[in-house]
Length: 377
Image 1 (cartoon, helix red, strand yellow):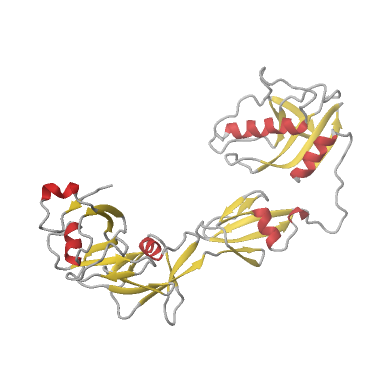
Image 2: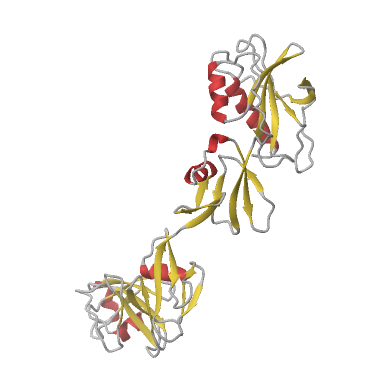
């Protein structure tokens, strides 16, 4: 931070300035970035303040005092400011006139004909959770972002107002007005009055892009340009026949079944060719594969959990969008008449299978880690 000392009284020798009681004032330019300056005159004139700010001539220099309530008050060249009683914050810039504007009804005289949204926010002390709007007659008010520039060189007073930021999201025809820029898909469905656990294919539509399938756990950033709507389609659309009941040939541990139900996935237990399988339908995959969902199967040993679960199987065979070949997927298993490809992913010696603590839930963490590792997550 730059600090200067100014001898405002010619009767005080320059070499003695350091021994004189000084007052620290804050001076900013048109960027509203302040620097501290020491001054030994407690009643400087506007001209003296312009000189201390670094101007060689006071002609065309505007000195504005920032009052306690945030107002800006013009200080003429021969007018004095009593720093013993008044605030010592000033905006000092080169300007031949001032431009009057209001922010939320508070009046300011600004010395430049161009002002940015960021400066308006600083000037009016507008919090970041509010947006600034330029009020216009016979037209919609115009939002002024921090990087936007407004030309004040027009007739009349320019009026700006701040309003709480609102983001809109169309959920299957129901328009939500939200006060946070992000929302989880599940929360959006609940807000719109839909049961998120009813079973939906959910698609996010962004203007100019193909629809994107999203999950209940997906976070939508409403600041993304072109977000149009969330479209819902029931997962099970049939001709009126009874829904297919999941197959439960054998039981899992209670903790396993509770975890699988929490995931909201359709799951089944099957026995084929004397091999016991847990089959998970529509298992979500991380970005980086050529498909977004897959069937995942775990082979459950007859003596589980005493015997551990090895690796996992998928159908269809997974491929990376990058084209790179996935190693160690040579295992095979046939389930429901189709061939599943097995990933040989096993636990290391530092964390062997523990029959007391390991189960389907912990094995699925290995599955997720293996899937994520292939795409660099």
